[in-house]
View 1 (cartoon, helix red, strand yellow):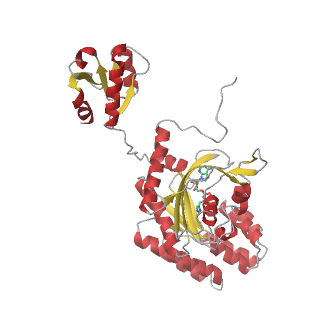
View 2: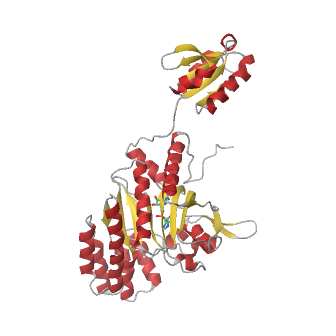
View 3: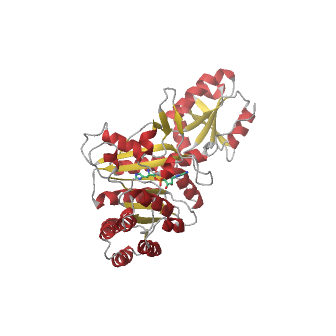
Length: 424
Ligand code: HAM
């Protein structure tokens, strides 16, 4: 039989890489706790209808779809938002608002695999449901800022826009929703020429062209520019006003770098308001993104409930941490190997190993039955700090030999002092 490989676009994460993921997930969970978000664990497999209803063409074309043995058309979740919106219309329907829900896990998209783009990837996801206020939008942006900061990332910047600006311009010109979605999809991919080709009216096209040229790091200045530019486009202007309120809240309460880009769009179709992404220099892919979706829950048959949320790409954050050489301050205390000198010492040695673990020390027990020299050689390779050697003679006096592997110095030490000594 040939050696098996992972399915294209899916990866094994081993050792340090897996630890980096766990570290990011831990920080995301801590952030959720700080902001009062409850964790929700939902299935990886959902009805196709739920996942495709409002996600948009981009996601619909990339789902892993199959029929289960009961002939149900199902798919692997490509994101969390649809599942959480399902919860808001079913089991959490009567919960007091706002709902704050956090999820973390793998999601699946049939993307073209490359660095930072996989077919199975991890997201940490935050959804705030029930608030239509700019402070809701601000909370989601601040959560993202908090997570990036707590991970030690630097030089990251938020790209912020509002889906209502482009839609406002298009709808004033009578462009139907389907065409609007097609335009937005191309704008999301920065295929501006293709996007503009879909717009028939010259005036509307030139409005969009002008919009694409407007962007800036001074949000007040960019907002003022936009308000002048959009004179006569009331819907688009009120979208800018709403964006300005969100920007005011986030910039006055926190330190963060923001670029306002009114022509920026996102691949998902359910957005109705503020949208954002997070980027770092030198990495051409977003570390996370999100936005406001005020019509999704009602489209799923629930009471009209506004919502805003975001997801962070854990695989990409791991790359960013590596790129920025951010040291992960993961646990890693002292590591010890415990080696019985003879067969008869095995139980006693195991007992000591258990005592050390109970004291919070990482212990690798000699499970290969190797002789001392081989075992110590292996301990060096595994980067252990100490070897605890359990021999009959010392044990008779309630002691063991503790060998510091870096300098090969060894001392005989009473078992009850062992944990303390290793930790010191
Ligand atoms: P999204 O922008 O599609 O938004 O995905 C969020 C993040 O997932 C991206 O910014 C990126 O970091 C990561 N990501 C996306 N595709 C891939 C891939 N193929 N490989 C690795 N990482 C990837 C959503 O999923 C929305 N549900 C966010 C949201 C929540 N909006 C409102 N609530």
